[in-house]
Image 1: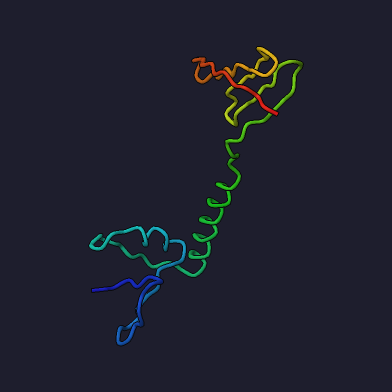
Image 2: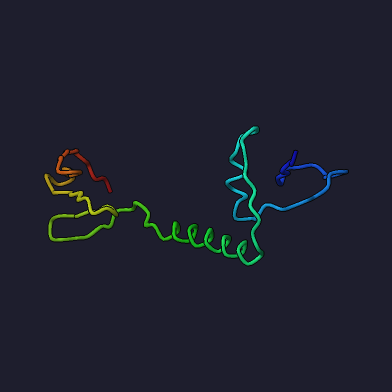
Length: 118
């Protein structure tokens, strides 16, 4: 019965090492619970490098996802704030220090009163 030893393992004292799990599969393997069935498949060294490169490409593409930080634009009396998904958030001047924040999400508007302090 094969045993997979992860990074928190003890020494292999006495066990014969018959194979290695490619590094591209380590994260998936670490998420399994004891008793899960695992199927092993032989891959070449080139395939292992290719799988690792594909995994790195996926992780790098996640870094390119924009953060949900609004952009502030000054347009006359309005300060228009756009979320990364293009949802409009408007601050319109009501009094000297109070503003109405109008948030539109999926064509549903909500208003909030905001007091700006300096």
